[in-house]
Image (cartoon, rainbow, N blue to C red; front, side, top):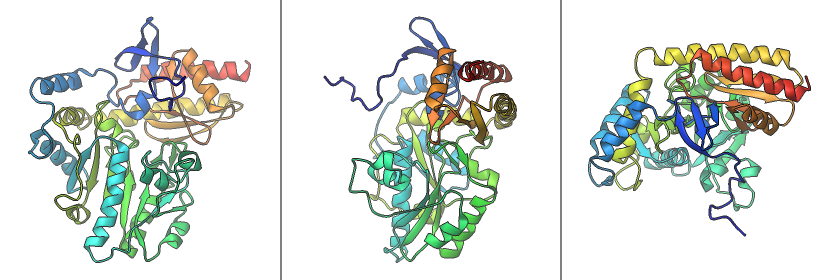
Length: 391
Protein backbone atom coordinates (compact mmCIF):
# COMPACT_ATOMS: atom_id res chain seq x y z
CA UNK A 1 0.00 0.00 0.00
CA UNK A 2 1.33 3.43 -0.92
CA UNK A 3 2.22 5.89 1.84
CA UNK A 4 0.24 9.13 2.29
CA UNK A 5 3.38 11.05 1.34
CA UNK A 6 4.26 10.18 -2.26
CA UNK A 7 7.28 7.82 -2.03
CA UNK A 8 9.80 9.91 -3.98
CA UNK A 9 12.21 10.17 -1.05
CA UNK A 10 12.48 6.51 -0.06
CA UNK A 11 12.08 5.79 3.65
CA UNK A 12 14.02 8.28 5.80
CA UNK A 13 15.26 6.88 9.09
CA UNK A 14 15.61 10.14 10.98
CA UNK A 15 13.02 12.71 12.02
CA UNK A 16 14.00 15.96 13.71
CA UNK A 17 11.98 17.84 16.27
CA UNK A 18 13.99 21.03 16.57
CA UNK A 19 17.11 22.81 15.40
CA UNK A 20 19.43 25.24 17.11
CA UNK A 21 22.39 26.84 15.39
CA UNK A 22 24.41 24.14 13.64
CA UNK A 23 22.67 21.24 15.42
CA UNK A 24 19.49 19.23 14.86
CA UNK A 25 17.69 17.22 17.56
CA UNK A 26 15.44 14.17 17.29
CA UNK A 27 12.38 13.68 19.44
CA UNK A 28 14.28 11.28 21.70
CA UNK A 29 17.00 13.87 22.37
CA UNK A 30 19.78 12.77 20.02
CA UNK A 31 21.92 15.64 18.73
CA UNK A 32 23.40 15.81 15.22
CA UNK A 33 25.96 18.25 13.87
CA UNK A 34 24.37 19.37 10.60
CA UNK A 35 26.88 19.61 7.76
CA UNK A 36 24.11 19.14 5.21
CA UNK A 37 22.15 22.27 6.18
CA UNK A 38 19.01 21.03 4.41
CA UNK A 39 21.08 20.61 1.23
CA UNK A 40 22.88 23.97 1.47
CA UNK A 41 19.72 25.85 2.47
CA UNK A 42 20.15 26.67 6.18
CA UNK A 43 23.08 28.96 5.52
CA UNK A 44 22.65 30.76 8.82
CA UNK A 45 21.93 27.62 10.79
CA UNK A 46 18.66 26.63 12.39
CA UNK A 47 16.30 29.07 14.12
CA UNK A 48 18.59 32.07 13.75
CA UNK A 49 17.10 34.73 16.05
CA UNK A 50 17.30 37.52 13.46
CA UNK A 51 15.40 35.43 10.90
CA UNK A 52 12.82 34.38 13.49
CA UNK A 53 12.24 38.01 14.46
CA UNK A 54 11.81 39.04 10.82
CA UNK A 55 9.38 36.22 10.05
CA UNK A 56 7.29 36.68 13.16
CA UNK A 57 7.17 40.43 12.70
CA UNK A 58 5.91 40.09 9.13
CA UNK A 59 3.51 37.27 10.03
CA UNK A 60 1.75 39.65 12.43
CA UNK A 61 1.21 42.16 9.61
CA UNK A 62 0.64 40.55 6.19
CA UNK A 63 1.27 37.13 4.65
CA UNK A 64 0.09 37.50 1.08
CA UNK A 65 -1.37 40.09 -1.25
CA UNK A 66 -0.06 38.95 -4.70
CA UNK A 67 2.03 40.87 -7.20
CA UNK A 68 -1.03 42.81 -8.32
CA UNK A 69 0.21 45.26 -5.70
CA UNK A 70 3.61 46.64 -4.79
CA UNK A 71 5.36 44.72 -2.02
CA UNK A 72 7.77 47.14 -0.32
CA UNK A 73 10.05 44.46 1.14
CA UNK A 74 10.32 42.92 -2.35
CA UNK A 75 11.48 46.23 -3.79
CA UNK A 76 14.00 46.56 -0.96
CA UNK A 77 15.41 43.06 -1.42
CA UNK A 78 15.69 43.58 -5.17
CA UNK A 79 17.50 46.88 -4.66
CA UNK A 80 19.99 45.25 -2.28
CA UNK A 81 20.71 42.35 -4.61
CA UNK A 82 21.20 44.77 -7.51
CA UNK A 83 23.52 46.94 -5.42
CA UNK A 84 25.67 43.96 -4.48
CA UNK A 85 25.84 42.12 -7.81
CA UNK A 86 26.11 42.48 -11.58
CA UNK A 87 22.33 42.67 -11.95
CA UNK A 88 20.02 45.54 -12.85
CA UNK A 89 16.74 43.76 -12.10
CA UNK A 90 15.43 40.77 -10.12
CA UNK A 91 12.39 38.47 -10.34
CA UNK A 92 11.43 36.52 -7.21
CA UNK A 93 9.92 33.05 -7.20
CA UNK A 94 9.84 30.09 -4.81
CA UNK A 95 12.65 27.71 -5.72
CA UNK A 96 15.87 27.13 -7.60
CA UNK A 97 14.14 25.21 -10.36
CA UNK A 98 11.78 28.12 -10.96
CA UNK A 99 14.70 30.54 -11.04
CA UNK A 100 16.53 28.44 -13.64
CA UNK A 101 13.34 27.90 -15.64
CA UNK A 102 12.88 31.66 -15.82
CA UNK A 103 16.51 32.08 -16.90
CA UNK A 104 15.78 29.81 -19.87
CA UNK A 105 12.65 31.82 -20.71
CA UNK A 106 14.62 35.07 -20.44
CA UNK A 107 17.20 33.82 -22.95
CA UNK A 108 14.52 32.93 -25.50
CA UNK A 109 12.54 36.12 -24.97
CA UNK A 110 15.64 38.31 -25.20
CA UNK A 111 16.59 37.00 -28.63
CA UNK A 112 12.99 37.00 -29.84
CA UNK A 113 12.54 40.64 -28.82
CA UNK A 114 15.78 41.48 -30.64
CA UNK A 115 14.67 39.92 -33.93
CA UNK A 116 16.16 36.45 -33.59
CA UNK A 117 13.39 34.05 -32.51
CA UNK A 118 15.41 31.21 -34.05
CA UNK A 119 17.86 31.53 -31.16
CA UNK A 120 16.34 29.32 -28.49
CA UNK A 121 18.88 26.60 -27.70
CA UNK A 122 20.91 26.55 -24.48
CA UNK A 123 24.27 24.81 -24.03
CA UNK A 124 24.97 23.13 -20.67
CA UNK A 125 27.70 20.91 -19.24
CA UNK A 126 27.84 17.17 -18.61
CA UNK A 127 27.06 16.36 -14.99
CA UNK A 128 24.87 19.43 -14.52
CA UNK A 129 21.80 19.61 -12.32
CA UNK A 130 19.46 22.53 -12.90
CA UNK A 131 16.21 21.41 -11.25
CA UNK A 132 13.34 18.93 -11.50
CA UNK A 133 10.92 20.62 -13.90
CA UNK A 134 10.61 19.15 -17.41
CA UNK A 135 12.78 21.90 -18.91
CA UNK A 136 15.42 21.86 -16.20
CA UNK A 137 15.90 18.07 -16.25
CA UNK A 138 16.37 18.42 -20.01
CA UNK A 139 18.93 21.16 -19.34
CA UNK A 140 20.78 18.86 -16.93
CA UNK A 141 20.63 16.02 -19.41
CA UNK A 142 21.25 13.22 -16.88
CA UNK A 143 19.55 9.96 -17.76
CA UNK A 144 18.71 9.15 -14.14
CA UNK A 145 16.59 12.32 -13.98
CA UNK A 146 15.10 12.01 -17.48
CA UNK A 147 14.06 8.35 -17.33
CA UNK A 148 10.31 7.95 -17.60
CA UNK A 149 9.64 11.62 -18.35
CA UNK A 150 9.92 11.61 -22.14
CA UNK A 151 9.71 13.05 -24.62
CA UNK A 152 12.62 15.21 -23.49
CA UNK A 153 12.03 18.95 -23.79
CA UNK A 154 13.76 20.21 -26.91
CA UNK A 155 16.35 22.98 -26.94
CA UNK A 156 19.39 21.85 -24.97
CA UNK A 157 22.87 20.82 -26.06
CA UNK A 158 25.41 19.24 -23.73
CA UNK A 159 29.20 19.49 -23.80
CA UNK A 160 32.02 18.13 -21.67
CA UNK A 161 32.58 19.65 -18.24
CA UNK A 162 35.12 22.45 -18.29
CA UNK A 163 36.02 22.17 -21.99
CA UNK A 164 36.05 25.55 -23.74
CA UNK A 165 36.82 24.04 -27.15
CA UNK A 166 33.70 21.85 -27.03
CA UNK A 167 31.63 24.80 -25.84
CA UNK A 168 32.76 26.97 -28.75
CA UNK A 169 32.20 24.15 -31.26
CA UNK A 170 28.64 23.60 -30.00
CA UNK A 171 27.49 27.15 -30.77
CA UNK A 172 25.30 27.45 -33.85
CA UNK A 173 22.79 29.88 -35.38
CA UNK A 174 20.07 28.66 -32.97
CA UNK A 175 22.14 29.10 -29.79
CA UNK A 176 20.67 31.58 -27.33
CA UNK A 177 22.75 31.08 -24.21
CA UNK A 178 25.27 29.13 -22.15
CA UNK A 179 24.10 27.86 -18.75
CA UNK A 180 26.56 26.48 -16.19
CA UNK A 181 27.04 26.03 -12.45
CA UNK A 182 30.31 27.65 -11.28
CA UNK A 183 30.47 24.74 -8.85
CA UNK A 184 28.44 21.68 -9.78
CA UNK A 185 26.43 20.43 -6.82
CA UNK A 186 24.57 17.21 -7.55
CA UNK A 187 27.18 16.40 -10.20
CA UNK A 188 29.82 15.82 -7.55
CA UNK A 189 30.91 19.20 -6.11
CA UNK A 190 33.08 20.02 -9.10
CA UNK A 191 34.44 23.55 -9.47
CA UNK A 192 34.88 24.83 -12.99
CA UNK A 193 38.58 24.95 -14.01
CA UNK A 194 40.47 28.19 -13.49
CA UNK A 195 39.85 30.56 -16.38
CA UNK A 196 36.77 28.67 -17.58
CA UNK A 197 34.16 31.28 -16.63
CA UNK A 198 36.26 34.04 -18.18
CA UNK A 199 36.54 31.91 -21.31
CA UNK A 200 32.75 31.51 -21.37
CA UNK A 201 32.28 35.25 -20.98
CA UNK A 202 34.56 35.84 -23.97
CA UNK A 203 32.73 33.23 -26.06
CA UNK A 204 29.32 34.64 -25.18
CA UNK A 205 30.44 38.15 -26.14
CA UNK A 206 31.96 36.93 -29.39
CA UNK A 207 28.79 35.16 -30.53
CA UNK A 208 26.24 37.59 -29.09
CA UNK A 209 24.66 35.07 -26.73
CA UNK A 210 23.87 35.20 -23.01
CA UNK A 211 26.03 33.79 -20.23
CA UNK A 212 23.72 32.40 -17.56
CA UNK A 213 24.86 30.99 -14.22
CA UNK A 214 23.08 28.57 -11.93
CA UNK A 215 24.12 29.64 -8.42
CA UNK A 216 21.19 28.00 -6.69
CA UNK A 217 23.58 26.06 -4.46
CA UNK A 218 26.92 27.88 -4.69
CA UNK A 219 25.51 31.41 -4.29
CA UNK A 220 24.56 33.44 -1.23
CA UNK A 221 27.96 33.39 0.42
CA UNK A 222 28.72 29.69 0.22
CA UNK A 223 32.08 30.13 -1.51
CA UNK A 224 33.19 33.10 0.59
CA UNK A 225 31.76 35.74 -1.72
CA UNK A 226 28.11 36.64 -2.19
CA UNK A 227 28.17 34.90 -5.58
CA UNK A 228 30.74 32.45 -6.87
CA UNK A 229 31.22 34.24 -10.20
CA UNK A 230 33.00 37.04 -8.32
CA UNK A 231 36.08 34.83 -7.87
CA UNK A 232 36.47 34.72 -11.68
CA UNK A 233 36.39 38.47 -12.13
CA UNK A 234 33.56 38.33 -14.68
CA UNK A 235 29.86 39.16 -14.79
CA UNK A 236 27.09 36.95 -16.18
CA UNK A 237 24.01 38.25 -17.99
CA UNK A 238 21.56 36.18 -15.96
CA UNK A 239 21.91 34.31 -12.65
CA UNK A 240 19.57 31.96 -10.79
CA UNK A 241 19.82 31.61 -7.04
CA UNK A 242 17.72 30.18 -4.19
CA UNK A 243 18.53 27.83 -1.26
CA UNK A 244 20.51 30.10 1.09
CA UNK A 245 18.60 33.22 0.03
CA UNK A 246 15.77 32.35 2.39
CA UNK A 247 17.79 30.54 5.05
CA UNK A 248 15.14 27.80 5.05
CA UNK A 249 12.13 29.80 3.90
CA UNK A 250 11.24 28.93 0.26
CA UNK A 251 12.46 31.70 -2.04
CA UNK A 252 14.33 31.89 -5.32
CA UNK A 253 15.45 34.71 -7.57
CA UNK A 254 16.45 35.33 -11.15
CA UNK A 255 18.89 38.23 -11.46
CA UNK A 256 19.56 39.83 -14.84
CA UNK A 257 21.25 42.71 -16.59
CA UNK A 258 19.05 45.39 -18.12
CA UNK A 259 19.03 43.98 -21.67
CA UNK A 260 17.68 40.52 -20.87
CA UNK A 261 15.48 41.82 -18.05
CA UNK A 262 13.84 44.45 -20.26
CA UNK A 263 12.69 41.71 -22.65
CA UNK A 264 10.42 40.39 -19.90
CA UNK A 265 7.56 42.80 -20.49
CA UNK A 266 4.36 43.05 -18.44
CA UNK A 267 2.44 39.77 -18.54
CA UNK A 268 5.32 37.70 -19.95
CA UNK A 269 5.93 35.92 -16.64
CA UNK A 270 4.43 35.78 -13.17
CA UNK A 271 4.18 33.93 -9.88
CA UNK A 272 1.33 33.72 -7.39
CA UNK A 273 3.51 33.17 -4.34
CA UNK A 274 6.84 34.55 -5.61
CA UNK A 275 8.08 37.58 -3.72
CA UNK A 276 5.41 37.33 -1.03
CA UNK A 277 5.83 39.48 2.11
CA UNK A 278 6.91 36.59 4.35
CA UNK A 279 9.65 35.42 1.99
CA UNK A 280 10.87 38.95 1.37
CA UNK A 281 11.10 39.76 5.07
CA UNK A 282 13.24 36.68 5.63
CA UNK A 283 15.35 37.32 2.52
CA UNK A 284 16.17 40.80 3.73
CA UNK A 285 17.07 39.43 7.15
CA UNK A 286 19.42 36.93 5.51
CA UNK A 287 21.14 39.74 3.60
CA UNK A 288 21.46 41.76 6.81
CA UNK A 289 23.78 39.05 8.10
CA UNK A 290 25.60 37.94 4.95
CA UNK A 291 26.42 41.52 3.93
CA UNK A 292 27.59 42.53 7.41
CA UNK A 293 31.26 43.45 7.73
CA UNK A 294 33.44 40.40 8.27
CA UNK A 295 30.83 37.73 7.58
CA UNK A 296 32.12 36.52 4.21
CA UNK A 297 35.69 36.79 5.47
CA UNK A 298 34.74 34.41 8.25
CA UNK A 299 33.26 31.97 5.73
CA UNK A 300 36.51 32.01 3.77
CA UNK A 301 38.62 31.55 6.90
CA UNK A 302 36.68 28.63 8.38
CA UNK A 303 36.48 27.02 4.93
CA UNK A 304 40.26 27.06 4.64
CA UNK A 305 40.52 25.26 7.98
CA UNK A 306 37.97 22.66 6.87
CA UNK A 307 39.84 22.03 3.61
CA UNK A 308 43.15 21.66 5.44
CA UNK A 309 41.72 19.16 7.90
CA UNK A 310 40.01 17.13 5.17
CA UNK A 311 43.17 17.03 3.06
CA UNK A 312 44.88 15.47 6.07
CA UNK A 313 42.13 12.86 6.32
CA UNK A 314 42.57 11.95 2.65
CA UNK A 315 46.27 11.36 3.23
CA UNK A 316 45.61 9.26 6.34
CA UNK A 317 42.78 7.16 4.85
CA UNK A 318 43.51 6.67 1.11
CA UNK A 319 41.42 3.48 1.15
CA UNK A 320 38.35 5.58 2.08
CA UNK A 321 38.89 9.02 0.52
CA UNK A 322 40.52 9.86 -2.82
CA UNK A 323 40.51 13.65 -2.54
CA UNK A 324 38.44 16.79 -2.07
CA UNK A 325 36.81 19.26 -4.44
CA UNK A 326 34.57 22.30 -4.50
CA UNK A 327 34.95 25.85 -3.19
CA UNK A 328 34.53 27.53 0.19
CA UNK A 329 31.96 25.75 2.35
CA UNK A 330 30.77 23.65 -0.58
CA UNK A 331 33.10 20.68 -0.25
CA UNK A 332 33.09 17.24 -1.82
CA UNK A 333 34.88 14.17 -0.46
CA UNK A 334 35.51 11.61 -3.20
CA UNK A 335 34.88 8.18 -1.67
CA UNK A 336 36.33 4.75 -2.34
CA UNK A 337 33.51 2.80 -0.66
CA UNK A 338 29.99 3.79 -1.66
CA UNK A 339 29.25 7.33 -0.55
CA UNK A 340 25.99 6.14 1.01
CA UNK A 341 28.02 4.00 3.40
CA UNK A 342 30.11 7.00 4.44
CA UNK A 343 26.99 9.15 4.97
CA UNK A 344 25.36 6.40 7.05
CA UNK A 345 28.47 5.78 9.17
CA UNK A 346 28.85 9.50 9.92
CA UNK A 347 25.17 9.75 10.84
CA UNK A 348 25.63 6.86 13.28
CA UNK A 349 28.25 9.01 14.98
CA UNK A 350 26.21 12.21 14.99
CA UNK A 351 27.19 14.04 11.79
CA UNK A 352 24.81 14.75 8.90
CA UNK A 353 26.29 14.79 5.38
CA UNK A 354 24.69 14.58 1.92
CA UNK A 355 25.54 12.27 -0.97
CA UNK A 356 26.26 13.70 -4.43
CA UNK A 357 27.06 12.29 -7.87
CA UNK A 358 30.37 10.72 -8.85
CA UNK A 359 30.49 8.84 -5.51
CA UNK A 360 31.09 12.06 -3.59
CA UNK A 361 29.94 13.04 -0.12
CA UNK A 362 29.18 16.73 0.16
CA UNK A 363 29.78 18.96 3.16
CA UNK A 364 27.63 22.10 2.92
CA UNK A 365 27.39 23.26 6.54
CA UNK A 366 25.79 26.46 7.79
CA UNK A 367 28.00 29.41 6.98
CA UNK A 368 28.03 30.32 10.68
CA UNK A 369 30.13 27.34 11.76
CA UNK A 370 33.19 28.03 13.91
CA UNK A 371 36.56 26.27 14.11
CA UNK A 372 35.25 24.08 16.92
CA UNK A 373 32.52 22.72 14.64
CA UNK A 374 35.08 21.93 11.95
CA UNK A 375 37.11 20.00 14.50
CA UNK A 376 34.02 18.16 15.74
CA UNK A 377 32.97 17.20 12.21
CA UNK A 378 36.43 16.05 11.16
CA UNK A 379 36.76 13.94 14.31
CA UNK A 380 33.52 12.14 13.42
CA UNK A 381 34.56 11.66 9.78
CA UNK A 382 37.91 10.30 10.96
CA UNK A 383 36.17 7.84 13.29
CA UNK A 384 33.89 6.74 10.45
CA UNK A 385 36.85 6.38 8.07
CA UNK A 386 38.70 4.26 10.60
CA UNK A 387 35.70 1.95 10.97
CA UNK A 388 35.23 1.69 7.19
CA UNK A 389 38.93 1.03 6.70
CA UNK A 390 38.78 -1.73 9.31
CA UNK A 391 41.21 0.01 11.69
